[in-house]
Image (cartoon, rainbow, N blue to C red; front, side, top):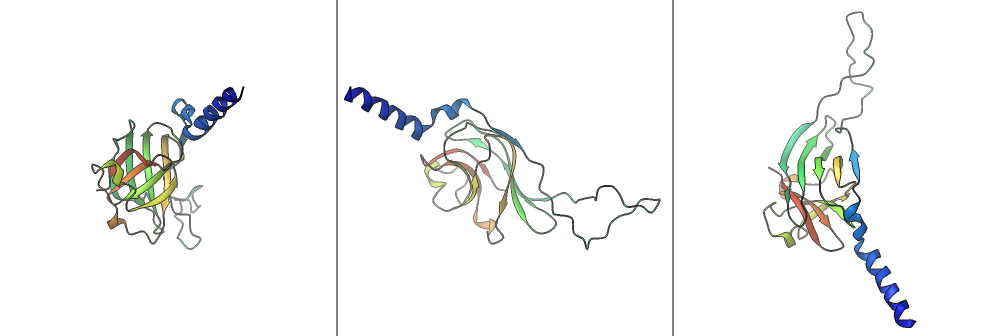
Length: 171
């Protein structure tokens, strides 16, 4: 009886820690491209009849760096791009992402190159937050003080197991 209870507790703890069910559950998010909020001081274009358009035009973000994901610990594909919107804010745009789901996944900017050693991606990095979904298109705001010239790749990182799923160069 005690042995059975210990086995059940150990199995429950293993499932809670490893979360193997995530390998079979895909999560998807499809966020729009980031844009700057419309400013009340910006001039508004008018139509030929003198009326304002129903929706103000917004400028597309400028691409500062980009690269394609390569698989590391798990099959990973998609694109990573650092974008700047007209108000100066910067975002990491992860597009067409396809990777495995897992516990404790984060998006890092890393000083390690995308083809560098897998265990080095968390040596010098800045975390942009939890991975929102393992599939789709998603945006992560980059803090104003982050010096992009220090970081050479984007990595999908499992903090729990210190393991890189995939990385993209920022070039």
